[in-house]
Amino acid sequence: MPFSLSSPYQAALPGDRSGNLASRPTPGVAWASAAPTPVKAPRALAVSPHVAALLGVDLSSLGSQEVLEMLSGNRVWPGSEPFAMAYGGHQFGGWAGQLGDGRAIVLGTHTSARGDRHELQLKGAGRTAYSRRGDGRAVLRSSLREFACSEAMHFLGVPTTRALSLVLTGDQVMRDMFYDGNAAYEPGAIVCRVAPSFVRFGHFELPRAVGDVELLRTLVDHVIDTHYPAIASRYAGEEKICAFFHEVAERTARLVVHWMRVGFVHGVLNTDNMSILGLTLDYGPYGFVEDFDAAFTPNTTDRESRRYCYGAQPHIGSWNVERLAVALQPLVTSPKPLLEGIDRFANVYDAEAMRMLASKFGFDEHRGDGDTALVSEAFDWLKRLELDFTIFFRRLASLDEKAPSVEAVEAAAYKPDLLHAEREGFAAWLERYAARLRENREDRTAVRATMNATNPRIVFRNYLAQEAIDDVMQGSTAKLDALMHALERPYDDGPAQAAFDALRPEWARVRAGCSMLSCSS
Ligand code: AMP
Ligand code: MG
Image (cartoon, rainbow, N blue to C red; front, side, top):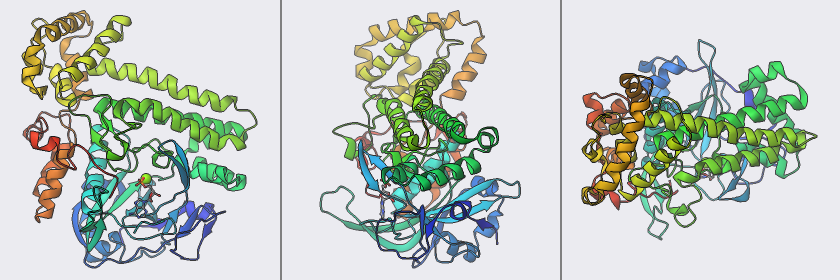
């Protein structure tokens, strides 16, 4: 058996062992047993060799029928008592009550030979007590998107949950992709997700909302003792809780800075999608910014309010951290340390974002208002000229600072005519930018290296995801494999990356799945 599974979460927290999969409130417990519902004909589409290595499991064993049965939920691992976790959450700004793992089932925690603990979850493995009106299943398109993007994000250097496997179930799943009454069958799939913990802000909000302070305290103690051992050993009582909150606020701020750096838009930053470890969690209608617009959201459900658009993510991160503070409040006597934790988010965000922007633009240090103006005008130009976020920043490193030319970033233009029409104004910005580069004390080669380690050459664009999905629907994983291979080194300039270093093609501007996505997955 390649996995050795235990469950510290189940051991530490009260649960409902009835095995009842009927949707219901589960007051007083943090989890409910949920055996995966067997599937017809599981077939592995992809396995991440990197996650296999992380777990310390042999890849060849992952190809065995026995393991395939486990990764599809058809066989329960010895020692494992699969369960779904209870949590609540604020969705689109309003309290949504109990939510919980409606289509994710925890198999248990695997401890690698090195002693690292990784929780294994099957997403799409069938109904749980928290499925509400859902079917507990996931479709191929959303599963492939989660599998590939979580790995891509890892290699971009962004904290994230990981994915071990992507399995087709052989069953069909009914989905109304556009919420327009035209439901259709799609192939079902299951992703095996891996993270030290999938606990969310919403885990704490639920017991707080129903006044179950005892469960709240047990949950906080468990999470700190298990996942923040340095805090557990240094602090006690209220100090421990506040140190934990400050750490979560800080990790969340750093996470949002990474998203802003690579142009990632999560799409559904509800508090039930916020990881207590500061990881990117729950890949749904996400997207990477292409023709730059701070108001860009890939999520059709959010098209009106744009609550979760690219530019709103720092504010939403802070708002969500505030919700966590409110959840923890019954455990502390004074609100002051919690308020300081919320400030910590802002302070860390501001400092890290400034550093990140300096690296993106190739400034050896931040030199006050002049730099701030250059940066903010750059984003104005990106929007006005419809320049591609990823390609623009990558090309900026090759600008000749002694003779800057618009041609250096021309490859980023979705509308070359627009660029040429506004050429003079943009060239004036480029000239000022080049002058600033000439003031750097660090030499140009070192600055370029920093820029190229900050600005990826390629990202997991939605149209690339869609092409890989279309290919799999035709029975081939060739595109997915090539894409995953290139995305293992997104900062490289090799031929694998060159193949995906291109503007989003015109056909993808309007095609579903390529620019806009729904939550229906
Ligand atoms: P999400 O929008 O994926 O973050 O999900 C929000 C909530 O809806 C979570 O409690 C999910 O477990 C639940 N959910 C989403 N899709 C399904 C589904 N197909 N079946 C059951 N529950 C679901
Ligand atoms: Mg979710």
